[in-house]
Amino acid sequence: MISEKLKKGHLLIAEPSIIGDLSFNRSVILLADHNKEGSIGFIINKPLKYTINDLIPEIDANFKIYNGGPVEQDNLYFIHNIPELIPNSVEISNGIYWGGDFESTKDLINDGSIHKNNIRFFLGYTGWDENQLENEMQGNSWIITDNSYKNKIIGKSTTHFWKEQIIELGGDYLIWSNAPENPYLN
Image (tube, rainbow, N blue to C red; front, side, top):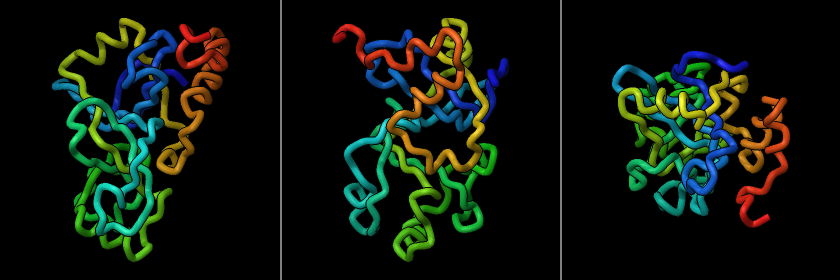
């Protein structure tokens, strides 16, 4: 289950030791790109209080918006599992695609062709410069796992996703599954 090499499509699970970091505490990140120049990912388990209609009133849908990460939080990004409907998408892996023609996407949402299990929107992304993510891995900030959910991760409930991942890891991680988010408040 735990992979030795970083690659697009992997999940990065925040180590329980990341406490007090508002962006990454209890985060699960889908790695959207990884190459020698750096890495990009989206936090998939941190919904915001906005819907797509709040940000783009001409879209008649209440799809949640997620905090994708601390970089460029004034930009909207999306991943999806319907490349046959959204032109110019880039495959991440396992049938998950990033971006594509936004005008077509708006029309498809409005006509009911795209459902919330097909697409996920993010404000911002998570980014790492060359070797930065590898250094964080050596510092035990992240646990790498394969994405066993494949393209169904888009519709996956996020409320307890980090906890579910920690339980799946088992062993010494089990004790963290029921720990409070901020142990200092315990």
